[in-house]
Length: 219
View 1 (cartoon, rainbow, N blue to C red):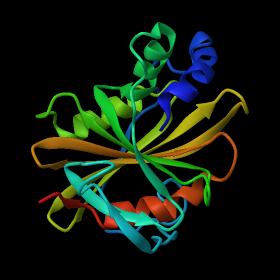
View 2 (view 1 turned 135 degrees about the vertical axis):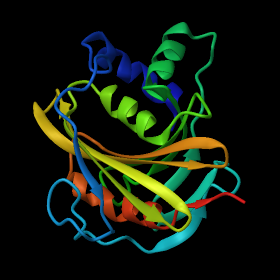
View 3 (view 1 turned 30 degrees about the vertical axis):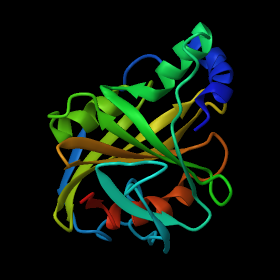
View 4 (view 1 turned 180 degrees about the horizontal axis):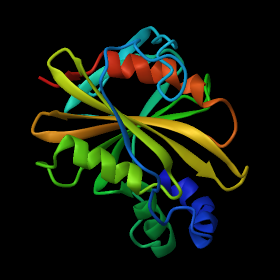
């Protein structure tokens, strides 16, 4: 993600509080569910995973504690920091790359084929519990509502997923988002599916499902 290029656009959003505040609504825990067990909202397990074209996380541009499959048409890039001499850009970049005790590490841009991104975050505290990290991440979303959680297992990894409604001020509507968290390689790693304000959030699910179903700890 080119933080420098987009940070000034985000400044206006900061000014009206789009990036501030905390999530609301009661949490729902749907327990442990195997993949494909819950059709419809919020999980939409009827949406099948995309086919992998390559693998992310084993090396450049995004070395990560985990690897996962990358869907065709999605482009991976390391998240770059802003010039510290540009105080405005640096402040906004900080807001965009830090959330709920996590720091963004890698972005997978799917806008060529879908309506958003996958982003990988790691907890600032390497020993942070997975569920606590995910809950803090969701709570850091302004006006997040209807947070729901479930747990499953992928290979040797215990995976906790979250789904919630994110309110978009520009359209004055709620858009569903998803994220998961795992403990791997001595770190707590979070993968988020984040849609743009326009387009169908369900378009992100094939790539997100592929990433989830192919998660492995980096050797």
